[in-house]
Image 1 (cartoon, rainbow, N blue to C red):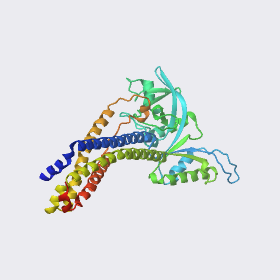
Image 2 (image 1 turned 60 degrees about the vertical axis):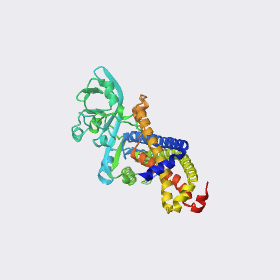
Image 3 (image 1 turned 90 degrees about the horizontal axis):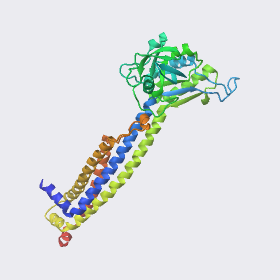
Image 4 (image 1 turned 45 degrees about the horizontal axis):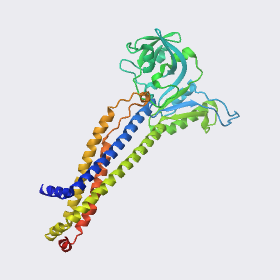
Length: 414
């Protein structure tokens, strides 16, 4: 305890200089913490909205041949048929979940409310892959709906709001779809989504693929949604899908234009890398601020060493070891850094909490979500690590100077 009191007394001998340096450390800590928290908040917010379309799923669309093959010319369309989907589902081992998707635009009506929108004919796996999660009390399309060609429908929350308003519970109600009654079996939970094809899922409606075929007699799918057992199998699955379609339609299996893929895994990885890079940049900027404050601590320590040179000589003359002198000044640097860092972290936490209370009502946030700074454990650990390094080195170099003072010279120092 006496040793700590002595270290604090030595540290605050230059009171004004030390207090200014502690405030600089606090400011630098707040800067790096808030910058990293902002970056983490943006990364989490946009990552969540990017996964709204589905996580690690593949959208497959038919293409057009770009190479002549087996006497057939280039420029032939390659449709995605029901037989193609069955072959892919039963012969490609990497495929875990798969759903064909038909789509069209039709009118819907409930009492006097009506709207036109996108109708998708899909299979049961579609909901899980595309994060179409029904709100409590509802469900998604199931295999029995497919088998019995039921007239049931699942809708996005915006569709439900426009047709039923705020007071009517949609599930269990019947709507008119193209002059036919359809039972609403589910309303999608609200989700954030920045990427889509066609329309955002909040504006979508889905019916069993078998019911869709009965009503509209489509000759091909608009696209498929496929998910592998393991994300690492994605490229192999793409290759096998291309080869299967080439075999079924008499096309060159090396022709990459016969099928088009949209790999959400690649899209999400690219997005994640962008935000990691942004966080790194923000962290470097904040770290430079802390380093400047660390230089201030080092200067204070050098002044402290200079003023205490005679005392150091006396201590060494009576038997003090080099490591004891090193320990004292390293501890002084760490204590000053810890005080400033604690003030900065507490201030950052308060500011982050205040930012979280700011209302954000723009339509943009309906798709992305409210970006709130996140002071995560990772951010806190990074800040603590940086502070520890700065405090250590800020005390190390003055400590080395103090430990090298020759006792005889120190005793003559005025």
